[in-house]
Length: 345
Length: 80
Image 1 (cartoon, rainbow over the protein chains, first blue to last red):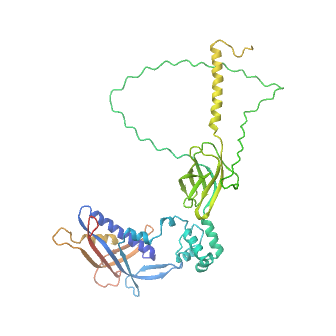
Image 2 (cartoon, rainbow over the protein chains, first blue to last red):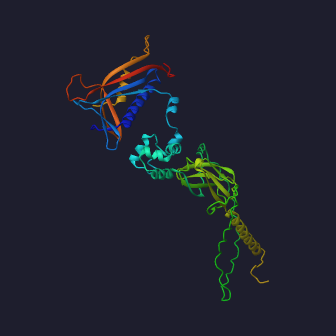
Image 3 (cartoon, one colour):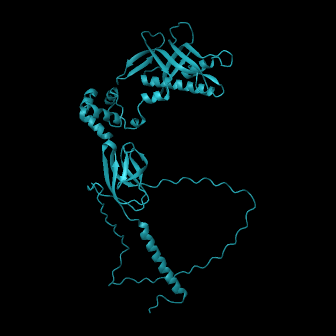
């Protein structure tokens, strides 16, 4: 493998990986031995040549045979406890924020901000709020409008809402096979009862005086007017219509999973079931009603959407089915009794 | 042949005396000369470190670096 330059952080990560492997091997040995050894401190005096890359990053190159003038770097590692790690590292919630690369910043802009301790959108926003955007722009050497554009890119956005499909039901556990034995005697099959068939209905051809009835037209959906919200202010934008019986609603947007603090429908809190960077899914409950949907984005404010629940189509279909069955039953009874329903009375 | 740093450390620690006898070792400080080489393997930086090939100064072998290791004896609960 040819020698090459490498970043300082990559070299330290490689050393850490080797030490972790060593600790794992010692841990395995401790399974069968009551007393074993553990590495407490590790240090390496390394002769390297330090170079500065064209990207402004410091790189190491291990010295080769018969090379003089190498620098001496002493790298030390020690064991730390979990509380020490938690005190000295960034919280995981800050790590979930969009990175500087996702905000659209160039590599050199990103490195200049990293020198100020900024690695993601939350840290950039916090620094801008505490010191001012102009100060951050001056120290980072980035134009103010460029910083504002990057911050705007990282802010959460709500685009709309659509019904979400129900999650896949969990697979039923496999039923154990029945114990082997003689098969039970088969039950006698009942003789099928003849099903009476209704008499065919004669079709009258359309006459010139009577226009042909058009096919069944769909009933126009009822127009719903969203009720004013609890604040009394009208909600901007057309209402979002969802069919009746919708249980889950997907709120679509950008950077929502980590920004949404609460979702309420007419003041009633809704549970957030799942979410990703493009949206979240909320549970509307058993009997949702139309009204104002509030999405709390924390310090970014509250977004309001008008939600209109349309009546369930199943109730209308059941009524029509019952009516059809009643007609067939009436005709069947008439045929069985010898009454000809088509004979003019 | 190059040996990874982890394998060298495991071999070093494997050569330490077991705690079966009447004399118990509580702590060991090791200072070991090693030849260190680095390179890319699988897209990641890898570190190879192993005892030097020879004690002679040949001018063609990699330079020798110093590795210091402090090892403590621990029981099953991780207590010294």
